[in-house]
Every structure is written in structure tokens, then in C-alpha cells.
Length: 368
Image (cartoon, rainbow, N blue to C red; front, side):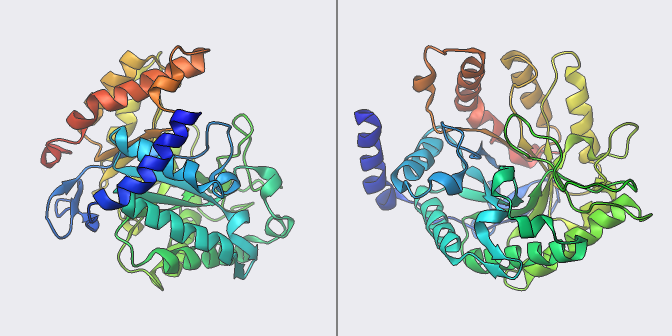
């Protein structure tokens, strides 16, 4: 514990002095990867989902312990990351359908400043309802149009807060949204993964509307809200891998239909041991629509580390960036691993460090 607090002290005092000014990021002219605006150098997102800490708490539940957040950012930078994906919870940022929580917005300002000082870009993913107990009752009682209006207020407030900072890589409108079918739903959230609800419906019923039309209108609605205050930062949506128009389960967020409304496509892919080629085929499917594609979530959850490393290497043919996971512990804190989960996390962090330079090199060849 003493070592960690010493590390926190050193990072908080040294990093601001060593910080390098961040360049703005845009989509490259070939629409296959990203570039830095002022320098013209390629930019390859390589980083972490910072979706909870070592105790499983969401960011808003522990960011009053700011030294820990600062130390985590320093550790992610030390591991080789250039992007951190943070997940903002709707219930923590909205007091009512029309009133943002200014205290949370102030903490977001602090987080953006930390990213600037640490030299990390932020993938700001919004509208989270990961802990069902934190979702306001009034939010669940809104109808579709009222809910979209409240979500627009959320994004207006976030965009206004962050518009001037080059540390924002992108705004991700929502993590894994789904457009419903005609069968009415009662719950806006799909089932939990462990104790968190990552998949969210944007409507409770299609009412005979094409699902992809609902998705497209929702994206356009929130994009208009963001563009009232921020014309510059990139906008995307965190898509489940079953968003492609293929037989089987579908999210309604068909990339063929929605790609024109987004700056790039972000897909979540977890390769499977029993069918390692499926993940690459899925990625190739997302790369067909004239926009850069980043793998916004990946982890050796369903395959061993060797297969995962092979997937990452082969994915360079289509992917313009990769974001894995970091949960507040450095590799040495997992040694020796106490269980299978710790072992997999240790292997992932070691792989992240080992191949980072390779994965972010020669980006001009990405997608060729």
C-alpha cells in the first residue's frame, strides 16, 4: 500500500511537468484510420476500458478519491496506452430530464484535465445504466421521445463541457444499444452480465418501424444535441458484434444503414476458442462501409491468450485501433494470480505491453 501511495505522489507531481501537448484527432483522408490534425502524423488508438476499479465500483462511485484515479491514469500511460474509455452513468449526470448534475460535470472537467496532463485521449461513452439501482425512477417512466430528449440534454451538457479540449478522442453515444422488435418490452435494460447491465434498448417497441430506422433517428437526434456545442470531436456508437445484417440475433444497429451518421464504427469483439475465424469475419464485415473501424472492447474472455494474440495481429488488416481493459491493478499485482480471472488479466496486460509498439506502427497500411 505504501508503494502505491508513493507512486501516486510521484505521478501527481511529475506528470504535469512532463505532459506533452495533445494534438486534435480526425479521420484520415482515406477513411480507414485516424490522423493528428496539426502534425499530420497517424494516430492509432491503443488503450483500455476503464469501466470500474479493482473493487468493481464505477468511476462516479470512487472518483472523489482522486489520487487513485490519477494513479490509475498514470499506470495506464506507463503500460503503453494512448486512449482511455470511460463510461459515464446517466443517473449520476442528470438530476431531472432537463437538468444536468453540475457537480458531476465539474468532476468531468477534472477528468479531462487529468487526461491532458497524462497525455491520454478519452473515449467518452455516455448514458450508462450499468448499476440498475442507480437508474432514476423518473428516467424509466419516460416514454421514447421523452427519454431521447433527456439523453439529448445529457449529451449537450457533456459536449459543452468538453468541446475545447483536444484530449477527447470521441463521444460514444451509448454502450451496446439495441433497437427493439415489435413485441413490447417493459424494461429498458437487457439482462445483466454479472452485476452490471451493459446492453440498453433505445425504445420499448418498434411499432412497425424498421429497427434500423429507429437506430438511425436516435443517432441523428443525439448528434444534433452534441453539435450544438461541439463541431469538432468524433462521434460513434459502441456496437455489439451481432449488429451486422446476417442471419441470427441482430441489434437493429445495422452498420450499412448507420455508418453515414457516424465518424467511425466501434465494435466489441471477443474471439471464441471454438471458432477463432468468426471474429475476423465479423470485423471484416464492419470494414465494408467506408469508415474506420476500431475494436472498442476485446479481451481473452472466451479464448486463450495465444489465440487472442493471433486475432489481434490478423485484425490489423481491418482495424484502426484497439481498446482492451484495465481495472486499477498493474501486472505485478496479479503475480502470482489467485484464480483463472486474475491469470487471464495478467496475460492480457503482459500482451498489451509486449505488442503495443507493433500494433500502433505502420498505420498507413491499415485497411489496405
